[in-house]
Image (tube, rainbow, N blue to C red; front, side):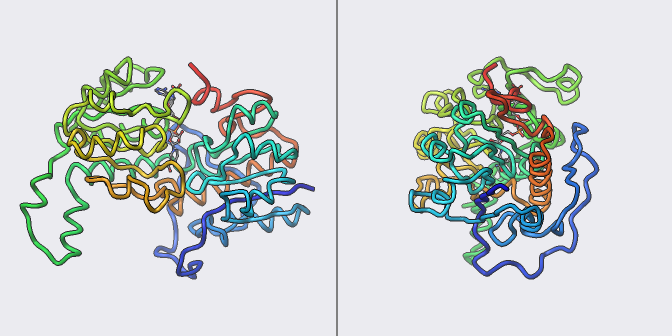
Length: 385
Ligand code: NDP
């Protein structure tokens, strides 16, 4: 029998919700590329419930305990005295969400001799040291596509919020004010702007599709070009490299995974090559940007706005400079954790566990690392070109 440790975010400060704002969530038939939604044999939760917090338990307790496994759930994840660090030593499986990542560093992985499977309930497994996981012969899996559309929606929302100066206008209302000039002195229309998409994978592609009707000129960079008919349909300008992309846009959205190639990419040099007054929305990973370079660019006016929902580290400390930099629209890491997304990644986590315990293959689109190397989705998105 196995020991499964799940690191989940804490319950709401007001307690686990007795009811929700809506009674149902929409039923989605398939993902946009035809990939099927998670197909576990059964579910022990109601889709639409808060599953990602400690009391939600990703709806897994009955399933795991009925099968005789030990299931530990905690939100206490950082530092050597944390519950996670203590429970990790004899864990077989670790589950965590990128919003509240259980960092599996080389040191932690060395302390976990039994650990064979790390599941990301969501998308983005950079909180696991993938090189060490490969050396250890572990499997790393995530629930590909589970929250991609939600992140794309959040991206569009933040692009509009920055360009139209929504957040300061809302603050004016809360403060009882009505000064139009203060707000519109920084308000623009998205219409007619050049918008760049850095990495046109599942999320980037969905952002392209959602922004096209706004009458913008779309540009993108990716390691592989999109099919010619897609470029034509959205009138996309392809740029060979990030340097060319950032120079030619007013708004840039970032959707590449965090890898050795992308870490710290948005530094002073790259930011200074952008048009003055550009906006960046980065819901990919905070560490793709140089933290202080973003602050400097906002303070100097080189950037007119920065938003996203990913920070380094997470949770962001109370004095993280991005909390107080000017003209930002940051949220905590929530874009991929809407209630419908939680239902999908909880079901996908169960599907992965069912396959794992039955000794069956986990579907390849969920696999990042397997058999001593990058595999499945990981071989495409994380491995070097
Ligand atoms: P995909 O794997 O579908 O897309 C990633 C894309 O990035 C691929 O097209 C890949 O190219 C491209 N890419 C990788 N490295 C580079 C590079 N150096 N330069 C240019 N392009 C590159 O992933 P998703 O769209 O589903 O997710 C993207 C990222 O978003 C995730 O890795 C994760 O970090 C983040 N994310 C954030 C969430 C949130 O809640 N904020 C939720 C979900 C994901 P190719 O495959 O062509 O080689």
